[in-house]
Image 1: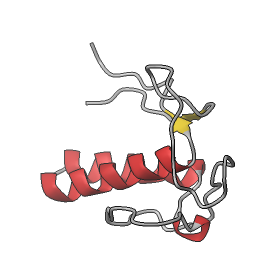
Image 2: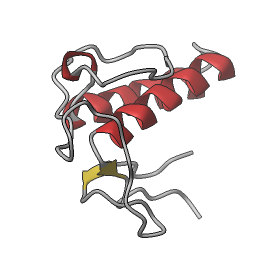
Image 3: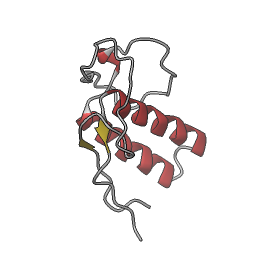
Image 4: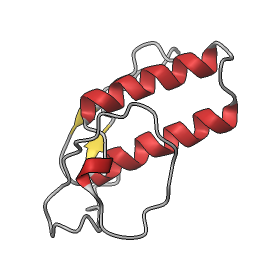
Length: 106
């Protein structure tokens, strides 16, 4: 189980150092999420990103905690948790957020 899970904001590159090419609909500018919905299902992006449907970092942190807790306690199944985690990851990617301070038990 995750001991200290967190998300932090970083620049626009992935772990390999390559720049992420995203169709945010705003040129080179990153999207800043405005949605306050904690849990939402994963939907594949097919066009420009709507900032009103993307969750900002504080909401993503809460979504991660709720998802991990619901799955760990058996209130939700693997398929639900997987969808939530993909949705959280998608919101991180379109905002160019990176999980640099994620720690797990060793």
